Image (cartoon, rainbow, N blue to C red; front, top):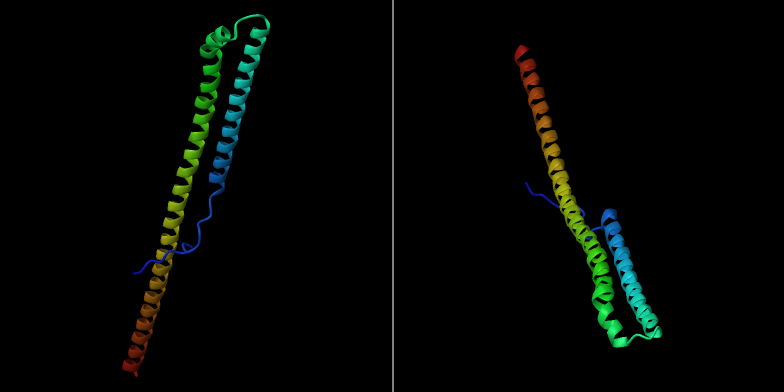
Length: 142
């Protein structure tokens, strides 16, 4: 019995759920970049305000970098970047599983078609055997 795969010649179609996960991953990445830029501009504005009040720029930067700038950089990267990475990875996994299930489904359909045709052939052979037996019985009766 030879199994053929149907529909495997062309490029496989990406499932809608995978496309949605990739899109959500992109949106979350853009949100992370927006928060990152917002925190950097907020740091810059805060330093400018303190310097305008008469504090030394070096002292202000020295105090605000560990308390405001670093958390403002790492939080969007860690939280939103992690969410984006999880969504992107889930999209990859979903695409591979969908592709594997589609391939498996095509093989099972092809195998099922050959089993049905074999069953039809065996039924036809059985019907011919019964007809032959009836004809032989008629000939012996007469």
